[in-house]
Amino acid sequence: MSDKVLHVGEADFDNAVLQSGEPVLVDFWAEWCGPCKMIAPVLDELASAYDGKLKVAKVNVDENRALAVKYHVRSIPMLLLFKDGQVQASQIGAVGKGQLTQMIDKSLGGAVA
Image 1: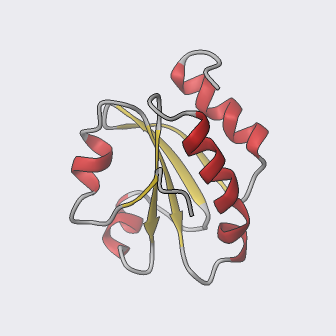
Image 2: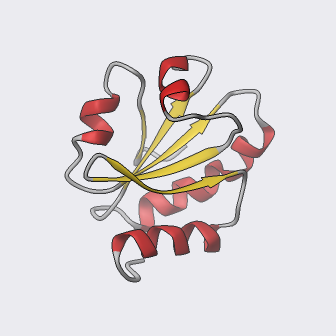
Image 3: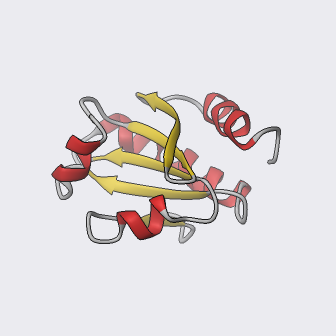
């Protein structure tokens, strides 16, 4: 697990994600979810590649049910890209680094990494 990936919950979600000065890619996941574990290394890579331009955060849906309900998380992994407190893009399921990079670059307004 990269030290660049934040672990956030209900107590600090607003501050860490919604009020962030930079876009935040939030991974809604659970300990028992195989596909969630598969994409964890990709998220670590993205956190390093976009350091200073994008934050990567993880929300454990088992521990933070209110956030899962608020953002209509019905299937995990579910990735939401927040910018200025609003959801800009979403991705459900484990996808490759290329697909996530495209989603991020589109939301950030051009290639960054």
